[in-house]
Amino acid sequence: MSFFSKLSFGFLGVVFFSAIFAPWITPYSYETQDTLNTLATPTFSHLMGTDRLGRDLFSRLIYGARVSLFIGILTTLLALVIGTIYGSISGYIGGRIDGFMMRVVDVIFALPDMLMIILVTVMMGRGVAGMFIALTLVSWVTVARLVRGEVLRIKETTYVEAARALGASSPRILMQEILPNILGLVVVTLTFRIPVAILAESTLSFIGLGVAPPFSSWGTMANEGWKSIKFYPHLILFPSLAIFFTILSFNFLGDRLRDGLDPRNKTRFG
Amino acid sequence: MLIYFFKRLLHGIPVLFVVSTITFVIMRVVPGGPFDQEKKLPPEILVNIQAKYHLDQPVTTQYLLYLKQLVQGDMGPSYKYIGRDVADIILDTFPVSITLGVLAMLVVMGVGIPMGVWSAYRQNSVIDRICMFYATLGISIPSFVLGTVLVWLMSHKLQWLPPALWEGPRHMILPAIALGAPFSGYIARLTRSAVLEVLSSDYIRTARAKGLTESVILFKHTLKNSIFPIISVLGPLTAGLVTGSFVIEFIFSIPGMGSFFITAVTNRDYPLIMGVTLIYAVLIVLANILVDIIYMWLDPRVRV
Image (cartoon, rainbow over all chains, first blue to last red; front, side):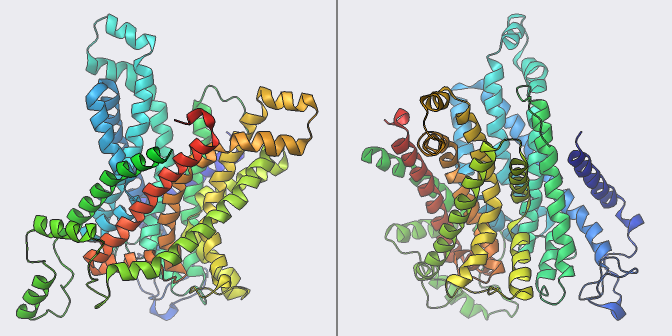
């Protein structure tokens, strides 16, 4: 593992750890107001300063990690499960059913996804649930396409043919022969889709259409900070950095993972 | 070629139909309507308003009415901007958004392609690493983070460029960079791998063996053949720029379609939501058709 991979891995580890154990490591609760110290710049008692209401930014950032990661990871997992099942069935059956199933995917793929995410989220009532449904809705099709292509290829290999010749049933071939072989692709897709979901969530929350109070994600915090960027830039700095480094780490690890899992790739740089 | 073009246009119509249907259904299935305000309207007035906009009719009737209007080129009145037609608002805001999009596209290509070519020519050198690091940064930085950093640095700290509004070329620089730069990293990467592949091909070796100068090899042979992967992502790229423009228009208070869409969604201004969604969908469909046509024009092998 290269230095940057270790760094990314370590960073994500810290983010995950603090998200999970948020109540035990945060110095303040995410809603405690220190009314004497509103809009304070970073000090020892408030590591990242406080916001307009005197809430500790550091604590809020850690609690925000919960929402951001939760949405990012869970929607991606769900999209992955739906997409893999859909794509493998479509690819394995082939023929007309495949044609029809892929037509459905094509149409959803053609929808302007940010528009759809915004519509669904706002119409569902701007909560974590709405965001969750909206993101899953637009992202499973990418996975379905990828998986289908891969299944189409694997289905023609000799070992699948051998399994069929031995009398294995279709579900067995799918589960025992094909699925293990697309697992690599699925894992790589996972690392690439999580940052996309986190990005979409934070973007939406930033423009004020995403996660609504009492929940707050990094995007919501950035939105609050944006209003006073001119005089209190630290309010937007920390959530932005958190989003940026999280996405960067995921992308970086995804790259390495893809290179590592691709047998054709011999050149390793970085 | 012309026949192909029209055929593709026809294929786009079902997509638009599905987009409009889904949008319509999403808007109507959820409780609440455009005229639910904190201060409740008297019931008689509400009934009148709803009758005027056909909101008292069944959803299917409403949809058919809308489609009928749409075919005649009428996108209906806006619920929130009283007295303005949706088509009116779109005509005002569309040029702004498209200018922003085109400028951002220039940034994407103007930065991405040269960077990719350069790093491919100096593969594994320091320059290559810097370019690829930039590419990874670009993919990872959300455009709203870049936008806010630019505003803070260039407008508030250095006071070189205006932080908001859309009143001339000086106002366009920051938004175009904020929208385009993240995508340029992706293009740089793509260009790099395409150029690397072409550079290792036999015809480049032949060209070198013939004694052609490096610049002829670069412009006549390498670039011409490595442009295809870039063209093929133009479709998704357009969609990405459209998506990004929402945020950028929000940050820089640009009076484009994105800003209007955001307010329309929060206000449940149904006709305006529909109008803007359809225009964006048309834009993306057209971009995809255009990409295929450029492809055919450039590559004789895929010509029909």
